[in-house]
Length: 179
Image (cartoon, rainbow, N blue to C red; front, side, top):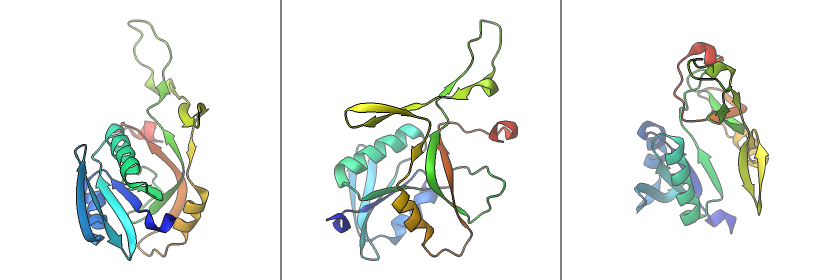
């Protein structure tokens, strides 16, 4: 039954996941592949949380282990995520309707000594496994029913906003690139 399967919550940094872990009652910890998976309940709902550490490889590995070992009914990846939209403020929550991976970039072919033109690169489609085939897509869409449910959760410390989430092992602080 779906209600018996846990809600999975993943956060990269201690500061991003510690409140969730602190809220789990009847905790048990299981170490798998270097990650500590903390299971229990929050408000009588089964929850499993893990601090995955920074980076897409860590996030992907911890998520795969979580799915394989706990069969969650949904996976929530949350954190501060380096929000760069100047319209966002402390306390605002962005609910991801879709996701793009910004590391999949193709830059123009340049010869030796021609320098770099990172800004003229383009994001290329990812291959996403779908059954026995792979589809190419520039974005992944989140479960629409879960997005709608998330929008109904009472929240008073900021705004609940839906939008696009980007992921990538890029710690960019160049304002022109961010824009």
